[in-house]
Amino acid sequence: LFYVVPLDPEHSGTDGEMLIMVRDRTEQRKLERMRTDFIANAGHELRTPLTSILGFIETLQGHAKDDPDARERFLKIMQAQTERMLRLVKDLVSLSALELNERRLPEDVVDLREVAETVCEMMDPVAKNAGAEMVPGPLDGPARITGDRDQLIQVAQNLVDNALKYGERPDGTPTKVHVSVGRGPSLAFENADRSGDSPEQIAVRAGCRPDDLRFIRVRDEGPGIDRNDLPRVTERFYRIDVERSSAKKGTGLGLAIVKHIVGRHRGGIQIESAENRGAAFTCYFPPQVHSEAEAPAQD
Ligand code: ADP
Image (cartoon, rainbow, N blue to C red; front, top):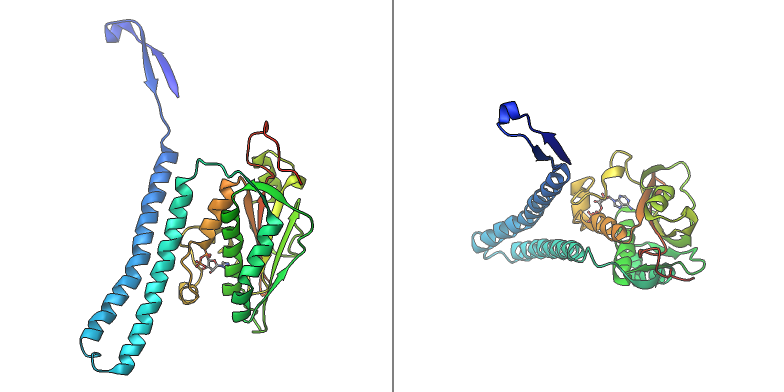
């Protein structure tokens, strides 16, 4: 904001005007704060496995040196901790690569149905291993958007991965992961808690009609997500029940990456959850991210 203030010659000894500039730095401060928080969190997450590995190395050099059983056990733990660090570094690199390319708009024509089919096929062995089942569909009609295919595959893969990790049925029977694709607002999960953006809000933001939106939706039949945690699960490093989540090979970055990618495509996520009936993540996208003047992706 600029203010032009007339000077009072009696007090300032001169007449004329003074220009006052007022800049609101709240947003900038918030961003700086987020960045330092992020680095502190990342540092902490990396330090934990490293400290544990160092501890085991010292034990192996000391009293466990001549104990083959202990050696075997400790090496296994060190391997698991190293794998965890690798996952974390991979996720951190993904996030920063996304931020680096922020200004480059995604521009391929991508069919979300093909993305869903690819991910279902890719995750089928993982699902079988976890005693779960991938259920593609309904995947009716093409649902094309302008986007980045690899990133959209990562979105679907992270959501399916979570459904497999956290979506076990409370009674222990094999869970099903439903992956569907469509146009317009998705069928809602009945009597569920909701968080995130509604299709109407997403459409307004993206400058299209709700009926023009395309979506990809991943639903599981697990315990669901507590309504207090629901609005926070897409935050970086947010994990519910850290003990359980860590055991399940989480980094707390999976949904933050999903949110970031969906945001780059000018879309939004709606999260639904019903206790002991499951959680559903629906990612909505406008058909195109380009300016109005350019040709839309044709179905
Ligand atoms: P993580 O790498 O820990 O899986 P995410 O960002 O992917 O991190 O998820 C954040 C947290 O949200 C998870 O730790 C888990 O507690 C919860 N969560 C994610 N997806 C589901 C789901 N389908 N059902 C229940 N809880 C979930």
